Length: 79
Image (cartoon, rainbow, N blue to C red; front, top):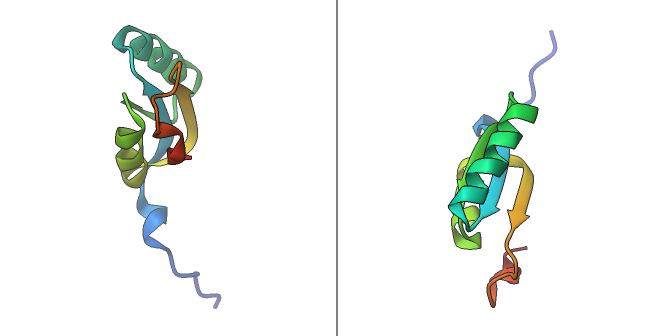
């Protein structure tokens, strides 16, 4: 009988899409499109890289969508 490999803590986190958008109207439009075209994924919307870092620890994003123009000073280190 084969044994199942141990699961890591990260495997229990929900998967989804993380959208970083600072303007609420655009966040609504983009997240609506993401939900329409990726209905099996949860979409989390945040307004900053700091919020994205915290959200990424909660969900396990398979896709990051970033719309910050221009990126705030010093925020590019997030990557």
